[in-house]
Length: 122
Length: 107
Image 1: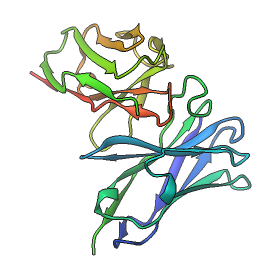
Image 2 (image 1 turned 60 degrees about the vertical axis):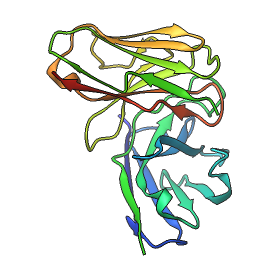
Image 3 (image 1 turned 45 degrees about the horizontal axis):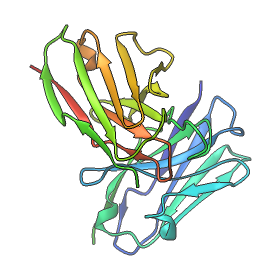
């Protein structure tokens, strides 16, 4: 049974870079896509982007210019970097697994990581 | 972007009630529609994928229907553990988008 465990800094100053990592335990890492999703009171649930073990990526166009998603297949981990954060980036960030790449069919997220609250304050 | 609109945004119901939540897409999304349940402080949990396929372990009182732009999640007999917020999500086009949620509260 796949489990996702995520970690990263929870308090950032404006203009800093958000950095989170998600580790995959108990299942295959290849053959799936691995997403980052965030949730805020103002914007609700927002898909950020995804990656697979071959480093193929897809992104939400609204965030693409600030987002990097990378993968470390030796550790079954993938990471998110979001540059130039502002108060609008305050959210709970989740990692999640999906069976196929975005917009290539039925994409659903299961399971999810436990979530990381990221706050941006000077 | 495809906008996903859920209604109602909240509802109050009693244990044993039949509950129906609607999700409308701003354009046709075929059957690329999923439902999630979220409880406070927890990550969303997949309930239904592809409009009507029940995720493993999800009770059969949950069901989904619809196609094109209009979709429904039904809980046939509400149980105490079902009080939560429910979200729909489309995967027809990038960016993948979610509905704003429907909070199911105890009457």
